[in-house]
Each structure stands twice: as structure tokens, then as C-alpha cells.
Image 1 (cartoon, rainbow over the protein chains, first blue to last red):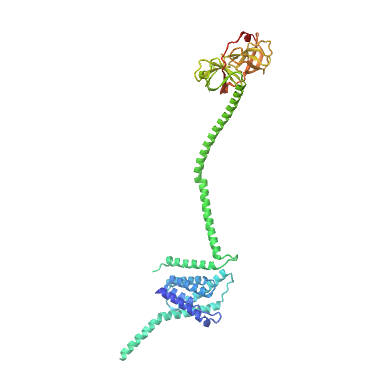
Image 2: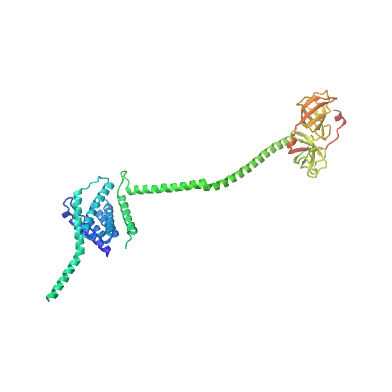
Length: 172
Length: 281
């Protein structure tokens, strides 16, 4: 079940990323839905799931992007692992810590990703801080929404159904 | 409950290592070599260096310490071999010397006008006072008492009885009871050579004071005794001086080294008494 959820999340995030990238990109401003999925899975299922999800998602992203396959995979594996470890060590079940975690994970991901590119590709290290922060906030918001939807969605629907059923009993 | 420090850590490092290898396989170094190859070569070169160092160290340890046991055994074997070779070399030298002696003996035998029989010395003096040797020829070979025994250096002595079937005893000329008719080769001064307990071990007697004898003159057998063939060398005059009486006092150094006699020739001509003419001469 968990494996299916992980694969579904990765595939879905990739599909959304590739589909919506043209709309959301707008130059440097772009969300990284795969990274969001990895952080989400790491926070939800732990370090092992996080690192495996990061490896799969990152490699898939690298393969689709046409660059050096492995850099994104290593970066997201790193992110998934440490987010999973931190999630098991601290209480990250509320919104703000989760938001901080998404933002921090995005910043670290960008730093590591650009650093690896610079190191392996022999290019200078270039990182646009404002764009990174905006992306981090966007990822954080999407992640928070994702958590809210997953956690609150089924419960809200159930409560609504229960409320409807109780009201109908009172009336009738 | 997951044990993050074990299972998760291993999985993490495995995933990272796999991807590092994946990236390395795609990236080239500045020299144009793929990073994976370069890293692999670098890593394996260190491994090979370590392995080579280990093997070399092992070889050194083996060669310098463990192998010393073999070296010691080899050293002992070589020492034994050297000793054997030294003995063999001495035997070869002895054989060569013997060959030379035998060659000289054969030369002497071929030059001789009388029949001779080669014999080997098989024993020395049985009594320190007596100067005798034993040879490996006896009556079965035709050896009889009073036959002369000579060597390439000169007269050795005579056969004394009894003669065994395959052995005979020889009285050396240096024995104090031995005597031989002799004369000087240069002036033909006659006399008699006898053994003496002195140095030199021969003395020539009955040589007239009027005779011209000098140190260095060759003394040969005169043949008047009927034992020793005429003309065979006995030795050289080493010291000559006028005696108090009618005769010279002559000391003769024998031509034969009696201390190293190994092969001799037995003159198979039976001894005969000297004729009056020979005695007069």
C-alpha cells in the first residue's frame, strides 16, 4: 500500500510538474512538485521511504530533464533522508513546522543541487536567492495544502455526511 | 519500529553510492576520462598499491625471516658440498700427482733394459728403527728376495725375505743396515752407500781420499753388489771432506723422497753375486 502511494505520489507530482511547468514557470519562479512529494512522503512515512522516494523521483526528473542523471536523484535522496530523520525526531505534525521544513528542504535542495552541478559540471556556483526563497515558499504552501487536503479532506467529508444524516433524522 | 541508525543508514548510503556511481559514469574529467573510470582506477590503484605492499612485505618477511630456515638448511648443505668438493679436489690432486708419478714410473720402466714390475706401497715402517716398507707384490708376481726396488728418483732399496704371495717387504737404502755399491757419475769414484741415522740419511764410504768428489756430484749404483742395476741414481753428494784415514767423508742426499713413496718398480732380475772383475773395477 505504502509503495503504491509512494509511486503514485511521484508519478502524479511528475505529471503535474511537467504539465503545469509552462503555466507556473514564468521564468525563474517555479515550484518543484516532485520535491514537495518527496518531503511530504518523508514526513509521512519516515526516512527510508523519503530517501527512496527522493531517489526515484530525482532520477526520473533527471532522466526527463536530459541532464546528468543522478544529480537530482542524489539531492532528493539526501533531502528525503534528512527530512525523514528530522520528522521522526521532532513533532512536525502542525502547519508551521511543516512549512519551515518545506522551505528549508527547498533551500537546501537548491544549494546542494547547484553545488553538485558546479562541482561535477565544472561550472561556477550560481544561485538566485530571491527566486529560491519564492520557490521555497511556494513549495511550502503547496505542501501544507497537500497535508491539509490529505489529512482534513476525508475527515471533513465524513463529518459533513454525518451532519447531513443527523439533520435529516431531526427533521424527519 | 525502524532502527534508523542501522537499516536506514545502510539504505541511505547505498542509494547515495549508487547514484554517485551513476553520475560518475556520465561525467568526464578534464583529461577526457570518465570520472567513474578515473575514480575506479584511483580507488583500485590504491587497493593494488596496498595489495602490492602487503605482498611485498610478505615476500620480504618470508625472504628475510621465514626463508632463513631454508637458507640455513641450504647453507648447511652447501657447506657439506664444499667439504665434499674439497675432499674431491684433494683426491683429484692426489690422482693427478699419482698419474704423474705413474707416468714417470712408466717412463722409467720403458727406458729400463731389465724387466720391472710396478708395485704400490701398502705399508710403512713396522718398527721406527727399521726403515722398511711393504709393497703389494709378492711371490705370485715373481718377486724374490734381494731384488732391487727403484723409483723415478732413484734406488729405493731391496726386497727382504720372507716374501708373501701378494706382498713383500722392502728394506730402504736409508736403513742403517742397508748398503749399495756406488760410484760418482762424474769421476767414477767407487765406494759404498750405506744408511745413516743422520741428515742427510746416506753416507758414502770407502771412497779414496785421492778421489775427486765434490758436493753436487751424482752418485749412482755401481752394480757390484749384484742387487742394484748399474747406473741408477742414488743421490747427490751434499758434503765432502777429507777424513782422518784413507777415505773421504761423504754425505749423500738421496734422490728418492722416502717419506712419500707410493709407487715403486721391482727389478725382476734375480740378484747375483758380483764377479771378481766387477769387484776389482
